[in-house]
Amino acid sequence: MSVGSVKVAISLPKEVMAEVESFRHKLGLTRSQAILQAVSLWLKKAEDDSKERKYVGGYAKNPESHREISPLFFAGLDSFSKEKW
Image (cartoon, rainbow, N blue to C red):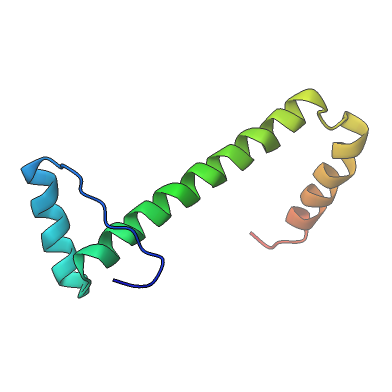
């Protein structure tokens, strides 16, 4: 166990633990490495979800005006007209 690590005991359903064991063996990970990766991904997703909610909330409170969007819309249309379909 590395310095600064904490040992944790958890209970998981047998089916879930069997999947974890199978998957970690395929990846060549220790049990601790596998659980650390899973928890790290979970925390990262929670952080990303929180940031996305703030981002969406900001636009809901202060949406772009038609005047701001219109030039981008027409620039996009202009690029399509140059394509030879």
